[in-house]
Image: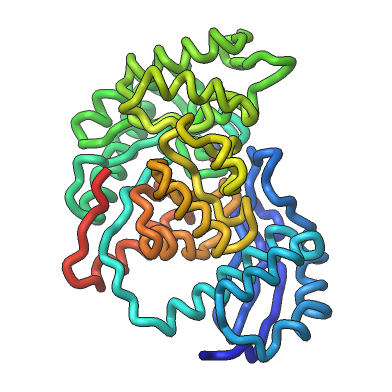
Length: 375
Ligand code: PGA
Ligand code: ZN
């Protein structure tokens, strides 16, 4: 087995022009993304310089000549997150994963469906109270066709909003923004999604709008209590035939998720801030959700993310591999989604997020008899 011969950390910029950590292990790199609507239960980050300093001056000595074994290295990283943060840990863990990826004979051929943020707001910028309006090209038969359908819908929506005379922007996740009411936007998007073979999903990121036990809808200047929130989400699912709803309730309201799930069995009621890629929290969510976001940097290492995915698969919860709003061109999550057979990857549509999509397009092209995972 190969050994760690060199390890070096440096600061690089993420897509929001914030410093993040990049680590090179034996010349192969991994970089940490960063969230803006982070869950309270995520493993904390530390400032990039502190993480880099610790990795280069303290951690390195203990890691040199260590066998390139993902589980063993991740076990050590897990105990160092107090010093190097989830950001230093995941950058190192990604680098090791990418080194091993280059070494092994890759034989995975079942590809995830992309889930792309087409219109946004909330913590990622834009006037809309809804954080993410998502498209999933469920009717596609191949990964390239899925990308075609999703981007066709994106361009069509963009044109339609432009033709209405709206001035358009792009937020932190490369999603479109415009000064339009959420329901009006949904009414415009629904036929576009339908004729491009896409289903619609939402990331409500409800913890971001939760104040004094109520949900604050800033475009409407309206507060909803818990029951009203459940009814509103239920109404949206039915009206727009939503196939996916992420974080519809506050991050500690497991029973609220359960209420929405029990009324809407065909919709993927998905935990993100609820579960934070943490197996203990997934245990609490069993039977209450049927899908879960996997953000490796929420928990700190590839192995722990994989443990979360394994638990999901045993528990009939669909793992959805996901980017963060602050990204780099690191495409490790695209490899992991394929490697761990996640049925869905949420990684945006436009801007530098195409790094993940492009990695999957390359892998599709290089794979003998690739096929899509059934969803
Ligand atoms: P992030 O959130 O800004 O914390 O990456 C994205 C999401 O809620 O899915
Ligand atoms: Zn989310």
